[in-house]
Image 1: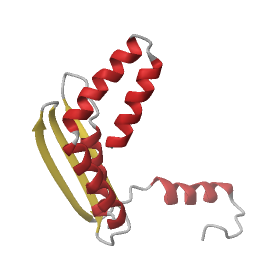
Image 2 (image 1 turned 60 degrees about the vertical axis):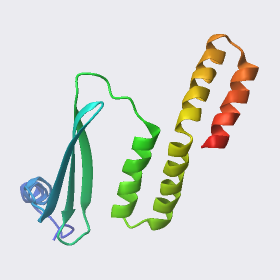
Image 3 (image 1 turned 30 degrees about the horizontal axis):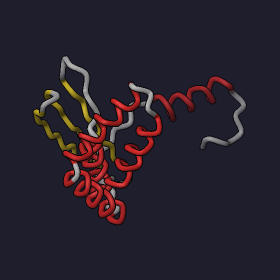
Length: 138
């Protein structure tokens, strides 16, 4: 239909309008999760079409203060997305990384403070040393 010989430009434009500007609807299931954490309220909406060919997820936050990105939180969200996509190899890697970060959380916090202090003092040799310790714990 799209590539037939058009002798009338008005008809061509009308066919394009029908193709691209009608309101298509997808049938499927939407899942809504909500919660509250130290940064405020959040809501996650996920949609999967009945055929399973189309899906999306997005998260919104309701907070007056800026959201600090926590590495563990980000990894947990990525882990959840990998499970939804059935990418189990990556999910196992993420699970192990999350576990390692949680085990070393206190030490990493101290090292991050030490790193910031070294950078402020412009002691870059110390900063590199601390950065390498942080990398080894991740």
